[in-house]
Length: 415
Image 1 (cartoon, rainbow, N blue to C red):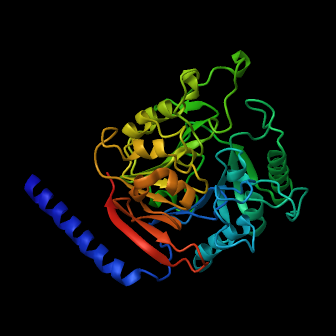
Image 2: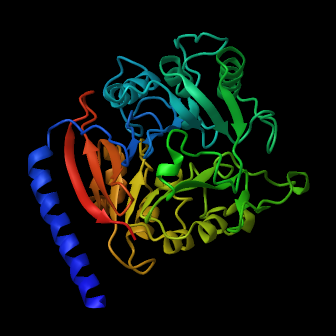
């Protein structure tokens, strides 16, 4: 029996390889094929201005995680607008999503999740921006939802936005006005991210058809799932006891683990885990998160692969087969971070690294290690096959809206 099982698995892998070689030759420079029920698609959308991922779940439920616009000046240390600067990034994101959804006759986003409140994740307030339907400007997520309606918005701060202190920066106040307007005028639901939950973000169309799919909420505001039931604990000390420093916006990011059969995926905004000698140990939030996340197939690098993220314990515990960097800065990723990620002494086995926008100054910092990032520009799409047994990485051309396939990697076998 065992020999038969091994032979069948070997034949399966051979067929996958042959199918991959054939489809690679047939489908490059052609439009990305539309989603079908049972597939899981995760689009990491490159605008050159921030982070954004759009999910089409197996039953057609839609999920958007972040849609940002940073406020940095244009120079050699920041990416150019993609595909160009004729529209704002939020509108480009909306048009990308509409192109995906139109053939499927889906016209709304079921869940909008904001990992934290930095500009490159929610949108900066910049000169010359248009005003929305309410008393807010259109930037990042507010501009996306000007074009595509949403059902529910989930973030780490609703409804008070006062942890670890009142959040009153200009771009956050703009976001808050936007959420309030959506709730009061568009009947959109707003919720605070519930750490430990496996039901807050769930399939809404045919959940019983895909019982092996779930999203587990792992962390937010320093609160971490225990790994049992829906219980949690507070990794960060009570803020009233902190005199020298409060938890940072990055360290307060929310994160979740998506599972579909054997396939696992982690995303955690700008979580941090590499700390200095004089920094309190509690600042490292990656280590407790890693303990309850466990191994994954695909990992979106925390904090864009910056030097304070992806610590050794986190990498050794998750040991991802695939890393995705949503990059736009000259430190995305940092040389020290990439060294940890590629080091076989940190964890063994193969790994492939993809970046949405590896700019020239980042390549110069990375030196020879830059070649370890095997795809360096484009929208990165993870397509998981029905049941979650295998998945493929597609790189789509970001210079136009045609969503043409530039490269294809895999299929990979989930573990």
